[in-house]
View (tube, rainbow, N blue to C red):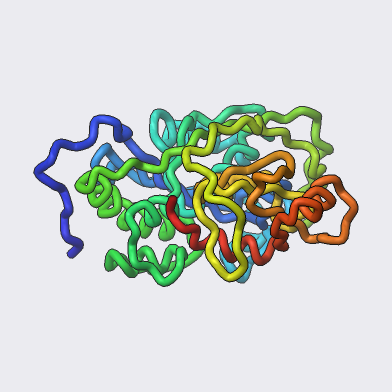
Length: 320
């Protein structure tokens, strides 16, 4: 039995009135990948479960890593298309903060599905439980869902099944929320910016064929709020990243650029659009390229890291 950490202190008035704990399983990690299943646990203001919902989704393409989510083409063939479940999904999200483990990924996948259906998800804010665990300084060995669950004594029954992952996260989120309220911790809420479809996509292929959505088919609003932390200076090799560091990106990345930038912002870093003497770090997979950012980084002596190394450092960013 988990300890109820409700405190005698008044519940913070600034906290949201309800949450939608979400998990989606997908055909992959790229911007043209699709959702194959989704689950939502609706929680009240104090994190108590009100309802839950689960659905399969026909992605109209190859299901991707079946060995992870277990959903084959045969299973998904008769599932509803996303536009057919969008109304029910919206009813579960309406008026709530979206909560997910690595929330920027779940939100990005959900926002794209709504954009393809020419709809907008009724979500205004999201909360990443990884970011919340960092705010609470939980002594976790890593930021995997299984580690968060183990910390709070939550038993995981079917990893990578959307309904069970959402259940596990909901059960781990409640004590996290109460710990934050008891300690007066500011919840790491971020704005959810919907994506817009700026050009018509090609005809969607059926299950069993790869999607032909063009990588440039989605255009998010990239205006970001100012980083709340001061710039601590340049990155030093062998040391962790610190909140407030100015990070610039150059060239192609294996992870979608917008997703990589959002992960950096959620970790408390400042994403810079150019390189200057104040830039803490340049991330590029081609340090010998002649791009203006690489040239400037070399001239200023700005540290340069590749995407893989940067991804490792993002797991444990030092608080400001």
